Length: 494
Image (cartoon, rainbow, N blue to C red; front, side, top):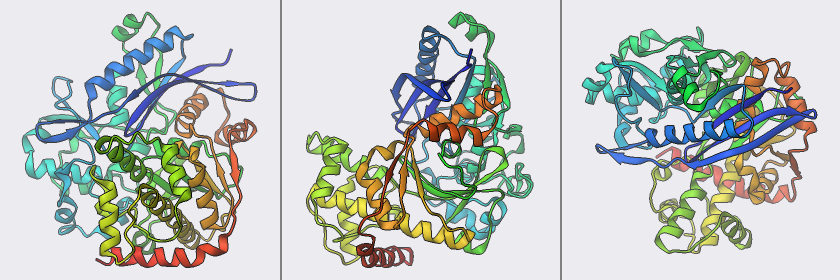
């Protein structure tokens, strides 16, 4: 009988638990629990509501037992955030959200001592103020009592695994998002850690996807009336899990993982750490099987999510995502553009107003209606995707024939079509549940259900979980893309 994995897939706004197994040459995914991931403000900081998330995890385990049981558990989450475990084995405080303002100025502070390019050359990771390195620098410089009371630092998937097993381990793909992994040795960069005054003892031993954290603690097994099952490390950074589920047989492929953050990149056998990659804003994150995902972080569906939230919360508009998509379709194209990665759009706020202000300060027509605002977002993202594809192709020397779009954003047909149009190549959209599926694939390989990633990708292709968008009217995108490039360059030169 096929083995079943209980998958926990935590996104930055919601989470779900799914049962996954191999069936009829493909995969069967059964969602058993979905719950919101809503941050809270405590002690002056935006934090993850870890107590509520843990209670929801236990509820999901109960549902998993009720729905036939499972043979293993694995967990993926977003990157960069962490919890600190004290001497008594308890969490010192709720983990702080990467959008909290505590890292304001931390990147500049660190880079005054260690240039940004030097940090990139050591880690392969593009310096961003949300990275764990800069969060830790804040603690070292502003809350020493907190950091020096900590015995272990656990990234979010490792923290949830600790709750389940009591074992402190750091999964490699997630650890690379800290900017504290040496890209050559693939271990903790202890010299950099020491230079920054961070206690070396807090960093847990590294494990790779497919290795075990441990087994479910006996008291939890007793609570759920099951035998202790293994808790595996998947490629626990959600991007690394999503890339595992890219439906391709090509060795060199381009992927676009569509979520709150959009990650555009390719899979390589080794990091590509050059001055040009740094200047392009590309980053090298750990992948499964010793691979590297060379990618660019783009502020993706966050722009749409925040625009919808603002209209609905302040104007009681009641817009669905489909409503906003239709408004964008009806609006005149190519009037105004924004740089999705501008710092202006990072924090929760009045997103329509921020978009208007950006257009005003870059001397463009200012969008007024919801449809005009949405069209501005959609076409700016499509242009960013097209330019990023060109830059990655130039850097790697590979000619990509297709953009593989994965994740929840592939439900947005307009985004998929505009991406194909702007890039001038087909966009193959799906699977929508790529992260959860990639999470399960890693553990199913460890359990011996699948031979390797290549076999898993072939299974996805045969499952019919994709839809192809053929580019149309690519020629009309030349002038708008060049206009967007100038807007992006103008912003980046400020």
